[in-house]
Image 1 (cartoon, rainbow over the protein chains, first blue to last red):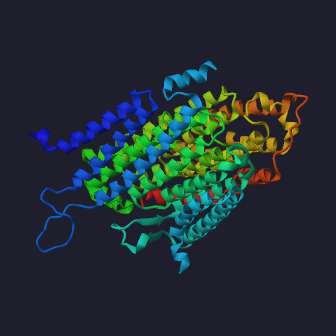
Image 2 (spheres, rainbow over the protein chains, first blue to last red; image 1 turned 45 degrees about the vertical axis):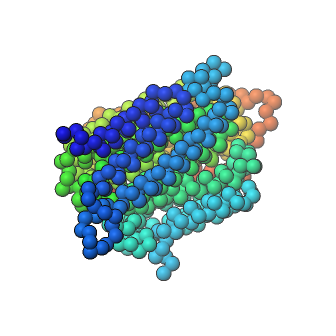
Image 3 (cartoon, chains in turn yellow, orange; image 1 turned 135 degrees about the vertical axis):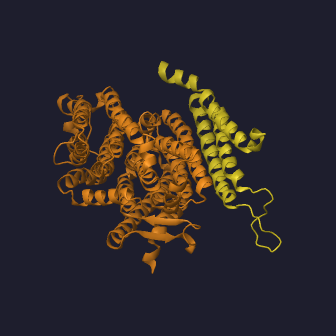
Length: 117
Length: 490
């Protein structure tokens, strides 16, 4: 089962493409941000899954173990998660302000307001 | 002893003073921002001098040895970009006191300067670091701060512009981090010098090709390479004047530097670069940027928007230097990176001065401004001439080198296109100058010059436009050394 052997890669790619699709296809600004979140989440998986070695343990040196998983991707992704949360927070704050200013968070309605006025 | 830690201080000082700004009352926060940006400039100056005297500086964060720990690595190329970013950062901060108070409002002033310092810290971090993942972290610090900086605009369209930029910028940064992740999977290292050494071994594998593609698209989104520039015109047009001047002169330039660092140093300027036809693609897109964006600029009536489109075109000249692919052309591209920052910084600051007096800067409202604000309009004329590429100004120097690079390749047609492309700014800046000098001012207007502080600081950049156009020893020498540093790939 070639496909199942790389299941983590398939999931990564699915999340990546699905997230990007939501960003492009949806006009609702909150939904776009959700899509962006899914898209970023796929990257977490992309980093973490190659770092895991089946049968490997946490990298604490001990005579009982010889195979360790790579801890670095986890640390990197911890940073990336923080970045993702910050991006989402700024994005949502902007959407709140946009809703106050235009009374809508639908892109086409905002576009119509700008171009009819 | 303390001078050893200058590379770290360069990022840490603005990063830590940013929260300090948030705690202070408005007036003082501006003062802190100015002091910090001037201190940063002094540090970059010292670092730059040391690089020129002693060669590459390698600084280990926390004293962890290099492939494992994060390394700050400064050679001629990024020392030059650091100097540019810190210099523009200091001048714009000095300029911005009244403008920010007027456009952002006294209540939010301190938040504005907090974000300004964060953006500055992020941009300096991207430039100085020698670690690919660290680039991403700093990139996001600067980007998140700049979304907020744009959202501060008075017009409500600033909010949608900031949102759009947030979506496009995050996609760009995520593409970038996907690329870095794939490289890490293949080579097991994030250190740039280490990556450059190990990549040739796995060059012909599909993940590396995919990483290459992700990095190209991600970084191009950030540097607003045509046709990935769609976020830029609105963001620049509706942002507060200080934001526009600062971002147009630094953010895209730092992205260009990233582009150079990744594709010339890390991918070695090597076969892969040629193999995947990147230079050809760059050449076509740059020319498209120069002609399409300049043409769109001609039809804008909002002057800030016009100059934003002109920025897209000017970025085209910088990438053209990379696309031509000779060392002379690359020097031209890097010089233009500096020159464009100086002249666009000058133009946006002068426009900001006008906006401070009259609000939105549209062509109609510029009527008769030549008599009402003579010093400002004279500055616009000089910086504008520089944008066109008149001999004696900085714009000429970079185009001269680009044309020489094209000649090295024997591409006469390209030289002709560069010359024709330079004529398009004549048309759109001509419209500005026509309105300012040849249309009568409305009788009742009681307009007068911007504040002395604004004029003096904006004119620093205007004078730089002429100074570096006449005396090219600093810019061209440094740029050619930078080109060499990038070319030899670390």
